[in-house]
Length: 511
Image 1 (cartoon, rainbow, N blue to C red):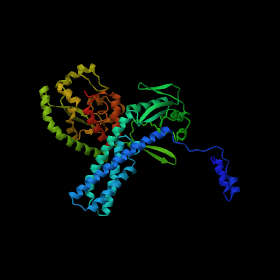
Image 2: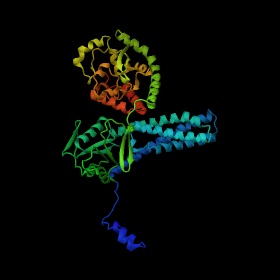
Image 3: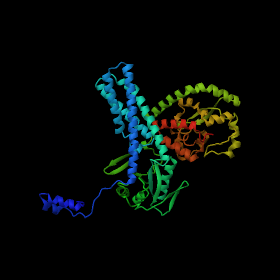
Image 4: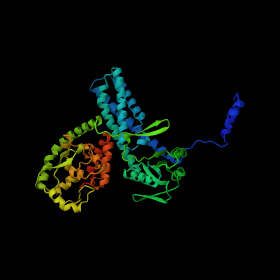
């Protein structure tokens, strides 16, 4: 039997109250009902996701076993712990750790290659595993718990995060080569579609390869965004068929057509079996993931946007991280400073350090320290060079600034001139990561929302530092600073520090 009507007829024939049931059962149209089948496009995506997830599982298991075994070796041969207790504890730890990584979705496709979000989940899963193990250890008076917390936890967590970083780099290389990326169609009004495509390109997002667009508000052959053209196909009623034609497995809805509140639900039905993701774009500009959550209320999805705060426990944690990094950095800087001081002195007369007034948190003026990279009369020569300004907005920049000394050019290119700023971090004027520290003359020319940059301490590095530095436009520099101010997190700070180290190795936009 293939039809719904045949199935209903069979039910009637085998029911004791068939006449009553027949009278109350509505007539069902005679047609075949078949559930949506998985398309070849979706199968290809699911296949590479399964393979990548298996690689993560195998790597996670190997690192957990290695961390557990190394801890067991210390317990057996250094602490002389009982073999049965060490074996039992190691097995419990390995199982709990591996399961925690699965329960907290650290291998979900949504976080493949995402960076901070993936590392945060791994850290949370590791903390959960050791938290549960600590509870069990206290209840059972388990004496071998401390070595696991002191050795296995930091060693294993570091190994897991480094492994995820390595796999992320591997995945990004594959995506740049056109593999393991979602073939994406963007649908909506022309302005919103252009905004989404531009944001994906500007953010360096390689997970989504836009293969076409569907515009609701106008007819067009193609859409040009930042010099690149994208084919425009179909209309508001044919988004699903366009996705099928282009072998797309992801559809991003940039805007919803007016007068059709059920558009997204209907589109989701049409895409069943043919696409993996239906993504709704929001114009909540520069609001990052940690501040956004979804809550369901009687079928009404509500997007919660957390209002940023600029004080409290999380900021104390940031200050603790600043102190730790500053102390660790100042030791090698102290060893390096005499050599740099001799080179600076030999190259041009004047002091080794350059102190300049900058504006910090809440508009407070402080004196920022740098190794001198310019002539001593640089400030007096500034007025004569204003017409040659190549900087963005309120900033003065010249790629070949005649005031910069020969040694100064090297110091700037390698960001060595900024090393003394770790002293400003230690005494609390600055943070390791934050907005660019502005000059007082810049602040007096601020307008509108730019003042929000002063809500937190300026940083030695930040999003501006790892995104182009002097090559950025003024608007882009402000946008990055404001995005950081409202969405910063400790994990993102660590990621920016790591990216800064790479930028110093391959400097760009530093002059």
